[in-house]
Each structure stands twice: as C-alpha cells, then as structure tokens.
Amino acid sequence: MGLYDILSYPFGLVLSVLYNLLNDNYALALIVFTVLAKLLLLPSSIKNQKNQAKSLRTRSKIEKIRKKYAGDQARINAELQAFYEKEGYGSMTAGCGTLLIQFPIIIGLYGAIYKPLSYIIRLDSATVKSLTDGLTELSVKTSGNNRMFEMNVLSHIDELEKVVTDVPAEVFESLRNFDFTAFGYDLGATPMDMGGIYMFVPLASFLFAAINSLYSMIRSKKSSNDPSNNASMGCMFVMLPFMSLWLAYQFPVGVGVYWALNSLLGLIQMVTLNYLYEPKKVISKMMVEETNERRSKEKNIKENMLLLKGKN
Image (cartoon, rainbow, N blue to C red):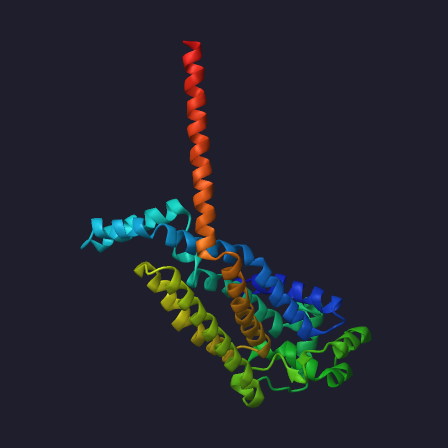
C-alpha cells in the first residue's frame, strides 16, 4: 500500500460516513467534508493571526537585528530564525505553510473520488476486481487510464450485471443508488477533458484564491512593513491562485469544488479572525498580560527576600 492509498483510505472513509448520513447526497457530503477540514485547521489559522500581531509587536527588535548585522545576510537570517523560534512563530506558520498542509487532503480526496467503489461505497477488493475485470470483458475503453476503471463501473452497471456472475445482486443495486453527480454534472469528470460549463470550477478556484491572497497581502502590509514577510506574501499572492487553477483544471471536479470552497471559506475565516483578533487588540492584551506577569514576578521576589530576612 503506497502513500496514495494510505491518504485516500481515511478521507474516503469520512466521505463515506458523510454520504450515508446525508441521505446518499454526495455533493452535500463533499461540502460538509470541506467545512470540517477547514474547522480542523482553524487552530492553526488562529495561531497565524496572533503571530502577525506578535510580528508587529516585535518589529523594533527585528529592525535592530538587521541594523546590527547589516551586510551579513547569512547572519541576519540565522539571528532572525533564532528570534522567530524564541517567539514561537516563523514563515511556516503563514502563507506557504498552511498551503502545504492542504496537499495530503488534496491527494486523499483525489484518490477517494477516482476510486468510489473502494473508498466510498467500500466494496472489498475481490468484488472491485471482478467488476473492473468485467469492463475488460465488455471492451470498455478507459483512454489508457487505469484510474478511471472504478468510475466506469458506475457507467456500465446494467451491462456488467449480465457478465459478472460472482457479484451479488444487492451490490449492483447499491451501485445504481450511488449518485456521483451535483445538479446533473459528474463530479468525477475533469474540466480538462470535458470543457464547457465544467470550466466554471477552475475559474472559480482561481478567482476565490486570488481574492483570498489579495486580501491577505493587503492585511499583512497594513500590520507590518517587515521585509521578511515578502517571501510568504509572494507565495500566497502569486503561487496560490495559479496553483488553484491548475489543480481544478487537471483534477476531478470534486477536487476542484473542494479547493474553490476551501478558498472561499478561507476568505470568510480571514475576515472574521481579523475582526476577532485585530492586531492592535491582541497587542494590548499581550501588554497587559506581560505587565501582570512582571508584577507577579516582582511580588514573588519581594516575598522571597522578606522570608530570607526573617530567617536571618
């Protein structure tokens, strides 16, 4: 079992559970899956928002490091990395870091969509093999792409039932009841192959990702002028929209729907977190907490000194 199957199995299981809970509505299951995935990453997003406030709070310290080691970029990078680790944040907590977290989800979802018999309907491997072997017997063409075998089974159920005799009738009935569409459109099709209205998905993915990145860049520039943020902002603004377009164009519509909805939810989440954890509010709270902590330490020191004097 390779990495592809390892990642596909759990995501397929989640989709399968959601599909059964939502009255066999695959499109709704996919939407709920996307929302759950976003909620799972919410703590990381909140931490990222707070880290941006930290960056604004410690900007003067960063500038001191740059001035102190001016001309020695390697030393500046090393000192900044040490500083970021001490403060508990860094480049991987924002921008490209959160983007990389999405890749296992994309790969797992990709596998679950292309193998609905194995990962969503969850037929045993022997049954799946009998059905896909039946496609060969029927001379069904799959464009030389083995990944399409399980999806093609869903398109040839009646023909397969006549030639595959070792699969129970109830299995064929469950396959007939499996709805792999949304508003009549096949979620397993790829916009690259289908074109037409299917191109709406990659275009929506690009648009939502671009708006998301633009808002993120504007917000980052307002909160900090630190040049060290340029790399992560560049990654967000340039890479994310075009990667979203490419993924949604090459991958099944179901993956594109996930990616477009994920970007839209990301934008809503950013606006909400920016309101709840506005940098100035976070900084004010941090300053109050630091003051209370300092006073508590001073009080403990004084009490310890008085105890020592009393013993003497």
